[in-house]
Length: 174
Image (cartoon, rainbow, N blue to C red):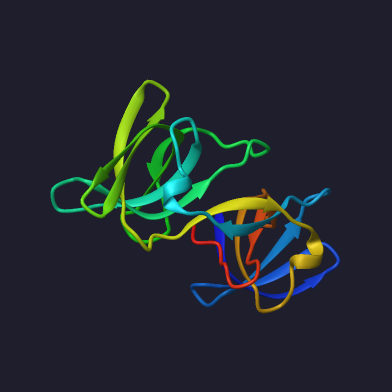
C-alpha cells in the first residue's frame, strides 16, 4: 500500500500523516527506518543502463506519457515490472532499465526494459524527475510531504517499508 500526504507529527516510531484523501493515517516505522529524501535530476542526465520507476498515463492513441520519473540509486531494491498505480486514476508504474533514449520534438522517449518486455514512455520537459538520497528520521517533520511504501498487517496496523520525504522544496512526485 502507498500512503501519500503531509506529516502531522512523529512520536517515537509512530508517524501520523494527513493523507491526500484527507484522512489521518498512523504508520509505524520499521527498525531501522528506511527514510529517503528526494532531489531533482535533469532529464538529460538519464542514460541507457539507468534503473527507473516511471508513473505514466496512456493517451488516446495508447502512447505512455510520464507523470513522474524516479532514478533509483544502486542501494535501492525495486521489483521490475509494470502494474496499475494509484498516483492518478488509470496511471501505471513501470520499473525497469533504460535501454535507449531518443528525442521526439521537445520530449525524450525512454525505452524501458523489464524482464523480457520493453515499453516506450515519453517524458516532456517539466515532468518531475527525482532520485533518492539517504535520509534520517530527523527529516520526518510536521508539514513535509511524504510518500510511504507500507504494508498493512493482519491487525490493521500499517508498517512502513520505506518513507520518502520532502527535502527542501522538492516533494516526492511518485
